[in-house]
Length: 183
Image 1 (cartoon, helix red, strand yellow):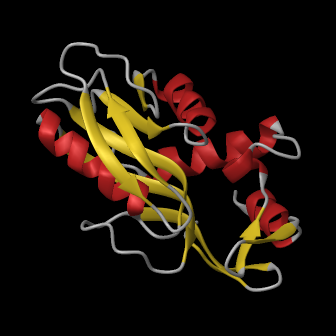
Image 2 (image 1 turned 180 degrees about the horizontal axis):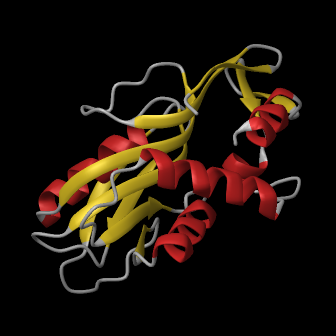
């Protein structure tokens, strides 16, 4: 089920970012060079298999690259989707939090999640855990119960303060190497 994901990761382009950070460019994590439906289906089907979706009210993703995976999962399960955004909307009950990752800082804004909601979180990649920690904090402030968390691609062993699942674990040097796959 994850053969396409593994092959696409192990053959994806790499660029060097400021500070000597090897950055892999991949359709799931960057939306380029092109996102093939079969790859999205594979990721969505794998997430359906590993996530606890019993009595879940909402799927929560973070802008931008969690959106396409979230849409696939939402359409497969009929569970509504909400997106934590990088822009303030000033809606009632909006929850702002600060995010710090290995390569960016900024504010994130959660809307559409309320006290007592049972949610699952999905995302494209976890590297430092900064974005996920901010999202978890926002969900705690909102009063939601996080039932499960699944990340498509895990880079390293980031601690997000709670257990999570990933579809593949990678190591990045001059290229990407999948070191574990969970299906």
